[in-house]
Length: 361
Ligand SMILES: [Fe+2]
Ligand SMILES: [Fe+2]
Image (tube, rainbow, N blue to C red):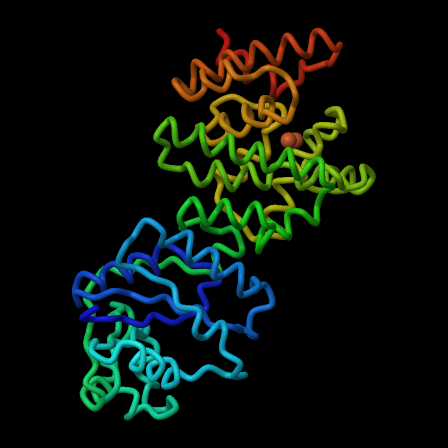
């Protein structure tokens, strides 16, 4: 390797912004990139264990031959990892390579306070990503001979992923978070038992598949809404009733089994701070459906009814939704009615009827 870029960070979790930064640096500096996850990030209570963070980096970079993972800091016995030690380690391992050390714009201005900053900048070239919203201290740039990397840095953040406000990370990382109950998934699991969690995950995966098959711009919103759709379901009914009385009085005479769609939307806003109207609407009408539904709401409604763990043959309905969302939706509505009639379920509430009037006419 002629040129090597060291890219340290919490990667808690890794996201598309990190990947884009690495690819950009790789192109501009003609370099191989090493992601070096840091062992601890004590300032974050919702942090994932280091082995999970490493696994997510591995998954995210597996299709990019120029991107690599280093366990140097993760495996270090030292309590605190200083960049100078990491750089020395690589200098020893790759004596003939030019080494760059990548930092964020926010670190440019405080770089002189880093341990052995001068020596560090001699052993490695300090490269930084210029963020348009930040003023860079040119004295530091000059003194430490820093190199600027030009590129459009999107504003994703790991925090937003941990809080389920964004899922802008490769799909394999999303799967890993869901399957291993990290971050938001741990929180979602605290609202429900095992069985419902299994249904939730299955609904979410199917929602996302249907959204992608339909080239939906809002595909990630379908995934987020489906992950959250049933968080109100296991709240004691007396508590649900109280929230209904205070916030959804109009629907208080609906069968109590329907309450949880409103409670879910309420909790998502209150507990998760998610205010996206598309996501909230999809949760709020996932059981009854409604008229004039967004694509995301249609998907979550359908996936909830026909996801594979429900235990009936729904393959044709799923395929129908994937090839044409609205045609598939009509088929799901027909199958819903069949089910309601067969089981003597009263489905003729105002919301459900508004939906049927519009889409089955
Ligand atoms: Fe539900
Ligand atoms: Fe559900």
